[in-house]
Image (cartoon, rainbow over all chains, first blue to last red; front, side, top):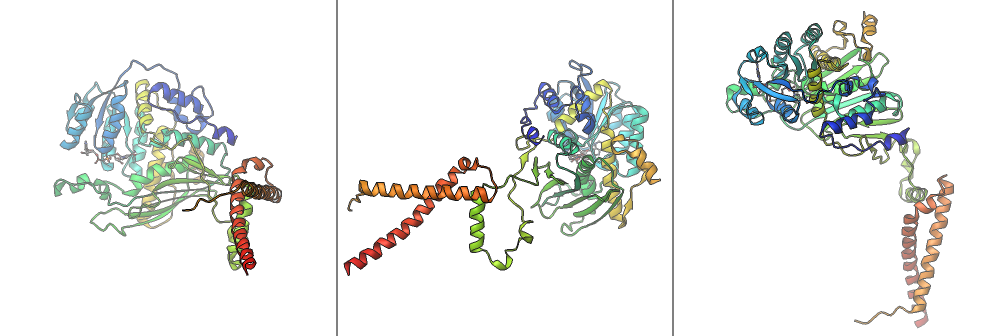
Length: 444
Length: 78
Ligand SMILES: NC(=O)c1ccc[n+]([C@@H]2O[C@H](COP(=O)([O-])OP(=O)(O)OC[C@H]3O[C@@H](n4cnc5c(N)ncnc54)[C@H](O)[C@@H]3O)[C@@H](O)[C@H]2O)c1
């Protein structure tokens, strides 16, 4: 089996739909392959309805940095017409118009929502504004793609999810890893047991910068640097943890039952209100743990999610996996090494108790056969377009986004309260993958 | 500068010495394959290591041979 994975086709150029379909077919999605269990949302790419020739009328609310990044993919998609944008900041509007010069401009998003011509909206505004915009959009019958974290608190997230259910509109969240080929492929391997029993997930996101954006005039500080202030953001938890915690639950196939954590401002004491370093622990009912941490005063270890199994380790950000047992070095080299050790090493320390733990060079294998060069953002936007055109909500996509948001907000609450918190059962939704209907009664 | 002449006889002798070094490396590899329970294919796949080892052994031997000739010459002069 390992060989078949190792020989799995190198990633192809996923530049057009043909290639994407080819790619997904190889992953086993088209035609109901085994991936359906691991990443059920990919069924959106199955050839159920031919949507070629159709065009989705889309409005973008908040075409800031993330919004414009996504607009670049959407503008290339032949099935989309970005007909309008809504923003309250002129420089963002000007930059967005460079991508879509003919789009109608609104200063008030409600006027965009009133446009009957628009079928779907992309919401990429700051965290504290998502809730009202998304609720209004769903009430207006628009399909919604909302950037993560979806709500400012767990209650907002639940009400947004419930609104999606009651209105029946398509609801996507900005969890692009769900559509990233290397994550999809490796999760299939994880769930197939290729890496043995998964014993722990360890994730971190480190940077060495102040996380600030340049502010043209002081009165705009809180508006531009909204990430740094409590009224508009919950900092590292909502901006970074949200992505990686979802990877952990995706790998483990369950939700944690307890969380604890700590955060503080140790280095960037510049008037910000959100922590510049965080450590959290999510504990599952079988004792397994997911650790998540972030430090923005040291970037040596960068960003990673490590999925640790009894047979192997996955580092999806690097795009690699490593097996515990690697082929031994040629006997001739082993013999020379042993001679060298006998001659040069200090006999006091030459015992084997620590030698066995010394990491051997293990360069691992690329999940997709080559270094990753893109994330799932392009496929994610494309999936949203397919779903909005067909009006078909792909399985699990809203639920994964919902739980990712709940996990980071719950963790944030544990940090603020300085307590270990149990999973808030009132925020359980029925989602088979995590068995949460059963979980709900377990906790009750 | 004077030309250094390596006679045909010397070349053959050196070639024989190196071949002996190579044979020794092969024997060591056979020993290692047995001792470390490796695959016999390593007799071929480790050919690069054996060639390298034979050159290293040859150079070490050369050093001792030069010292030996030097000492012998000195003794003869006396
Ligand atoms: N998925 C990802 O990897 C990813 C990456 C970066 C950001 N994000 C998310 O995207 C969202 C936006 O982040 P960003 O970095 O683009 O921020 P940004 O500050 O660059 O952009 C936000 C935009 O929203 C506009 N805006 C603010 N309030 C508005 C309102 N009431 N109506 C209309 N427009 C309004 C701002 O003027 C600005 O143009 C956040 O939720 C963030 O978490 C996601």
